Amino acid sequence: MREVTVPVDLVSEMKNIMGKVSTRQLLYLIVGGIIHYHIVLNLPTPVDGLYGYVLNALMDFPFILMTFAPAFLYLARYDLYLDKYLWFWWQSKKQTGTWYYHGS
Image (cartoon, rainbow, N blue to C red; front, side, top):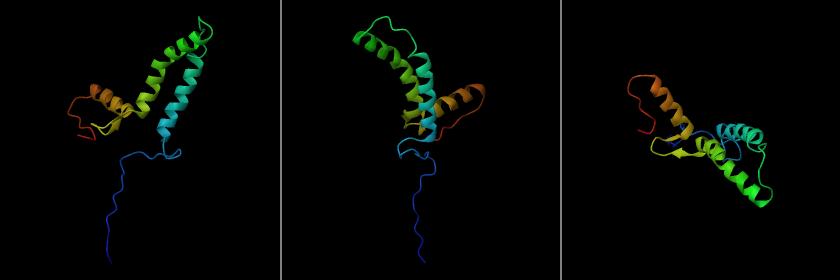
């Protein structure tokens, strides 16, 4: 009987939601959306109309960047997403020794 090795990626996370978004990323989107709704959208806008809309979009941009970047920004050099990289970096500051990341 012939044996064939099938390459299976056991390291990458499974994309459960429509094959595009993992559960971790969905959790970032839900929690970020709830915080965004309660903080940014309830701020009073000093200007009405189109200028108020543009001003609100400019106020939203840093928050959206902080929400989406850890979930979706992939660092190919370390073979990690940004949130896991930051977690390992933060943990390495608390411990002494040599740290080897998955991609090195």
